[in-house]
Image (cartoon, rainbow, N blue to C red):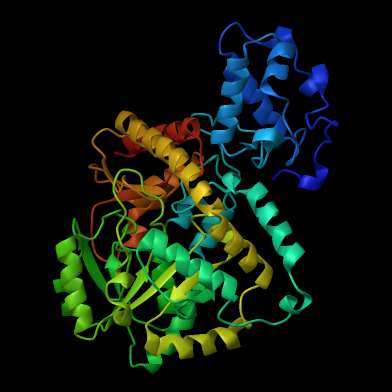
Length: 501
């Protein structure tokens, strides 16, 4: 990624960039006759990627750069707007336009049949049942186009806002705050999470109800022994449903009986038939189908829970919605029978390893003990920075930016599917960071995913997320790639499916 703020090019006394007419060696004669904004945006993007414009650098004022390049001010304004939408720069009024994030490499469009530098044999990766390390292996396998579901646009991480919050936190932080803290998490973050859940998810909780954890994965790990101590030796799961979540439950020696999902959500009649006392659900945006649990199905589910059932609610990406109103979390309807889990992995970055667990009161003490003896609590400084982002409104502003960008990328994927995968059915388009597509030819989705990976396109077969038989399909994440790359990747999928079919 790009350099740190300390590597920024200095500014002149009036606060503007000192580059003058030598800025990036851009010459007025280089500007093409048409497409000037495209040309300028591309040159600036390349400079950010290769480090000539480090994170923290200021771009020249639009009027200055327009005069030097002998183009209209609208050309420069449009180029800056595109970089802002990409998350590379940010306008700061009197502070000018500042570089806030850099792509990992200069953007390049993939070829029709790119040859990836893969660290795993695509054919072997998709053979047989996926092992416990399948996601690690897939992540380590390089590809020109990455459609991994649930992967946010890491280039959009709000570095400038994070740095501001971190400086403010360090300025105010007492020496005592750097010692061992409450294993439940800092009071500041628990309070901020309680406010965030009330505003965005319709869940009213007391800060003392919140346990800060290292993401949903750790939440499940902490729950394993607590649930077994309560006599729960199995947790029903949606089908199709997240393979990764199922692997975490199996690792805790918990059975995972599958429950079919239809257009209204999980089938409660089938859930009752399993005899399971607990179920793990994604009701706001079911993974991977994208189904939103209907009101009638919610009522059936709550009746099941009132009879003694426990709901583990994984609210993994509910903030990302585009074409539908918000759906309240189940936790707000039946607190005593719902264990709520969320994180910032899809909102900011998985690497932060920060999430929250809001358990029913009867499990609170046991889970606090489990967290204490696991790691004594999450790191304090990132908690305090995240709390400030939540309370200052910076996190909401970041979410608004992401929604616009993700909507455009989702639309680009849907348009490309219509062109290159005619007849495929798109599922879950109204929200989230991924789409699921099912298709007609009787081509195993593992075979299609293997061929796609051999041509530089990484995605997950729908069958990985099934325990029961079902139609073949692919789970395609769209949040991390620009529209042009998305279109190229879908074109490769369409070509591969036609050849296999």
